[in-house]
Figure 1 (cartoon, rainbow, N blue to C red):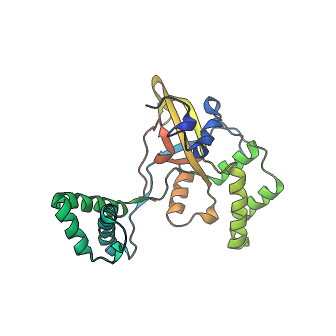
Figure 2 (figure 1 turned 120 degrees about the vertical axis):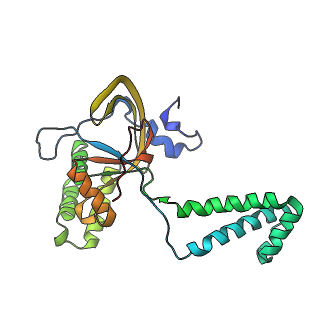
Figure 3 (figure 1 turned 45 degrees about the vertical axis):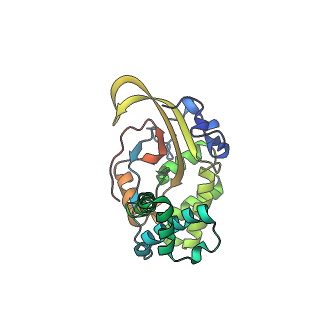
Length: 262
């Protein structure tokens, strides 16, 4: 349980990263957005999915375990006997000196620690940490609601939605313009308050559930959705999901994420 200003969710010193929480609309978060085409139905749909993790298959992985073990042993050696020429000492001699002074069990713990670092790379690296994806339509709705849908932005949207007519350089510049307009500040979007206790839109109880979300916001257009991201985007459109949150974006009040392998 966390009690206090969500702007300082982790610590006071890291204020620059937390400032988004201080300027969040808090309990007055926007739950509806005008449709881009002016039609009825201003609600937007959010979904939570498990973070996307991939294990590294880089060539160096075959050597990484040994390098991490040797590095950890040399670090401990240097801390106790000095770092001068520590990298030039044969690793067997480094280990033997540590065993002599601290015992085999202590050295084994050092090696186990190094192995834990190694397995962090083999078991999966979170490549979508704190991310949130919105559809092109949701992006346009947000820009229009804020009065940011200028002629330049509308032209950029047209470039991204008419991909075959423009080069990838044009698409890159257009996306950068839209991304900067959607993301007002360099800090992440935050939202906090209380929501009804619901599952898939159905009320479960009369409890109010506190929530705190903090995420990086990425608009997706068809022309930039390739590979696994295309599968994710197609799934979003198929299920009429406007805003897709990774589990790590939901700091408090997780509703229960879905598993989806794009």
